[in-house]
Length: 487
Image (cartoon, rainbow, N blue to C red):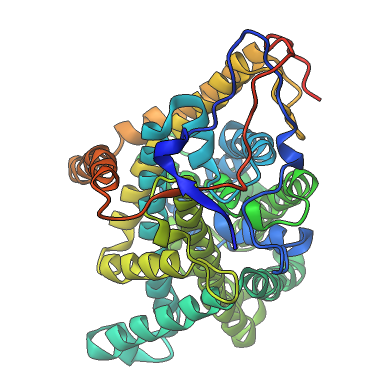
């Protein structure tokens, strides 16, 4: 049982000491807030958990060809990772090993900017994750409704959404190691049909089709949102860092291999689909890969792609719910949420966090695909701005803090690395519709008000808030904090 003490006796944020006579402990060596009698997640399951947090396969990238044509679609999935995915993954590796606990990015922001902004980060990230997760049961049924038309609407569809959500929620309840190995099996099953499709397409490939471009016929909003939605959420795995085996080595390694897997998982199917068939941009929409599979390999390959797409949505659901629910647990262990959010089931999973996340999914499942993608992108952008600020601030103020993995760039390099993704965030926000912007801003305002409300509840002792005694502290003592060498 973890020892807990009230937040009134202790600072919620990770105080990193003053500049006078400071010494920083090795955060990576401190026991993280997890229960040691449960199995930890190893490298291979972690790679596929990241794969499903970010991607899940090429299902959903078809709109990039419709929006911008073949050349820009292919170029986007090659260039965009350098602008967005690689910086985000590198920041996640550095900060995730610096703070290997379940609060993840919430703890990063709280450490740099204080507990108020740490809570705001947790609120918008959790909400964007739940909005994202509301999409997957719906997409799962959309892939099946061609074979089972009754799932297209009405009571059968509602029952199916409820049943699927409950089944996948129960899988999360049974343990993260189970979720991790299920992700491995689903990942292999989802990737293999595209390898087969690539092999059977070789005789039909025409490289000239890859270079078709028309800059006067580009839907930039759809194009950028499709790229952004398919290549973000690298930081989500940080909220599971407390459940990872030797996170200071495992997390950076898993992020590296997952990055390769995700980029290839998008680029290769697009290369095959575009190069093997004559171009008709209007056909390139959700589910078109199954039609390509039928034309190239036959009905059996189409069924495999459809089954892979359905299973991929299941993988993304369980991975996202794991991240969302463990984030709530981590926030409770930092005293940002009531203590009952830190309650674990007998399988070591965050019981209340899972129930809250599942309830949010069910409440939001009525939204359309386009509304879900736009709303989650807006909220996600707000959270990422806070992350970039926290990353740079911690680099500048506390250069001597131990970083088991450190991006090999200085302070100026850290700032410059964050500039391109920040510009991209501004573009995505500027292209948002007025409706999405207003709804998202209302959600942000709710968070701004909620944190003082929870502090008032804590002050009146209506609910119990506490901080885990097992969490890392950074002590005041004898190294010069301006020493930029991190060991």
